Length: 340
Image 1 (tube, one colour):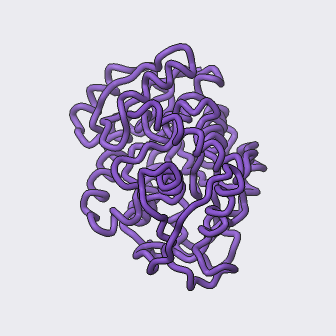
Image 2 (cartoon, rainbow, N blue to C red):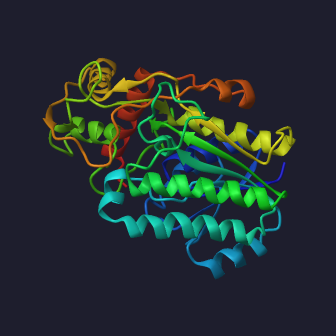
């Protein structure tokens, strides 16, 4: 096994993926600039693993620094690229921040390896926009993005697909996530938003523990069973395991093309109100919420067809909504007693 570079390695999904890679026998090197994560996560990883992962603080938008880093680590054979800003609402307000970070970091990484590497790209179901049919398959039309964040994922996939077409030595799997939630079973790592959470579940847990006021449900007039928006929520540990499966697939060289895409979800949609109810049932904690206006950039409903991931990656989600809520709540309680 070669060494795997995990960009954005101290972030929510990156840190969980580092755990699963090391558990699977891989050596890893994590890079991050802590723009959306906390250095203490490295100590948390050491508690889980018994060893602190190799780490380099690095701004991937700095082309010279990225080139020097890659040149000094010839042992790296694979990259899992998480390093991107990801909040839909913020991207609507600050589009240039998202275009600069999400494109420069990706292009610099590919260039530094001279397009000779196995790369797993952190993509998103936002590339589908509002699908015509549900569940949405990987062959569905990519529609106009509903947000600058979604647009960065669409264009990044185009960059990767076109670069793969021009360079046979570059092998890429784009993993289109649905909505990652939950935390590691140890409650030592989990979602750690800076400032007010932009995603539903961390806002729920912060509201439940008293850090925030009532939850706002953005819209109750969607064409869904209860009027609230529907998403496919996936446990972050399941998601992390899918990245290990993707790296292994790239290493085996069994794919008949050097660019592939896979959906990562449970294949089931849950509404915002259903998530609130699941949290209450799983934890015994009552939540306060209000109904607000629809949020700009949000789509009505989406969940994935995940049969391709099961058939070709040999992966499927195993943890349900109740476990997602329980682990997220356990993590929030850990943070109460061990603030970052």
